[in-house]
Length: 236
Image (cartoon, rainbow, N blue to C red; front, side, top):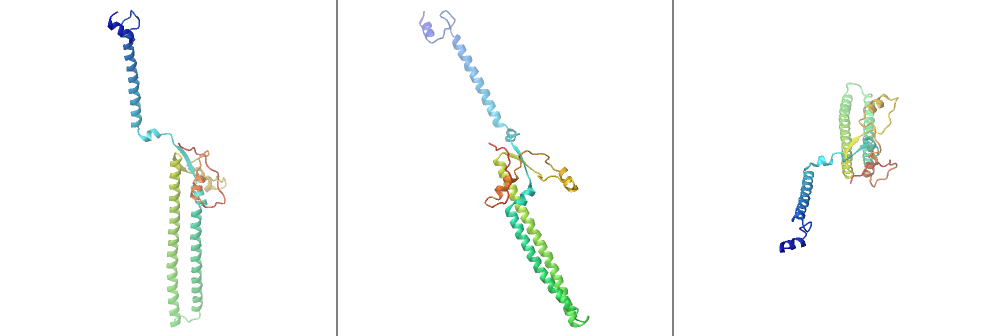
């Protein structure tokens, strides 16, 4: 056996002593080619996944929840306090107006004691007319002011609720939050039936996050009654 044959035998290049050389080398090359082919396919798939839009990758991976906004407003501690304060201001203004009306009534009674056409009658009549006109303007301005304050309270509260819902939804992988009504339909009340028929949410099973949101909104504020927590799956 020649030097080349001995070297080839030592390196396993013969399958048999009398076999043809380089068979094992060819098999090794084929294995390497298969490995690189699989590797290239894996790299291509990874690149395709990275190129896929985020919305396509996340499609169908989110959760849906519902929320009862009227219940939120009814149990929102800060909103209730602000509305109570506004109501107290309205009552105080009404009491002040009542006193002014009582004073005007006394002046009207006094006017009856004067003879029509006399200077005293005309002077008091003009005074009462001015007081009445001023009172009407004052009532209109106060009413407008209170309505604007009430609208501002509702607006600020609703913004706070929507921001809280958005933060909660992002944290729990919720992609859609629907508004719904948790009240039972009163079959004897036409308005209740019509509202129930037009409800966008017909059925929900433990995906109500109303009281979860309330707990966040009322954090640190004592509540007389809190509802059950929802069972919305927590996103990873």
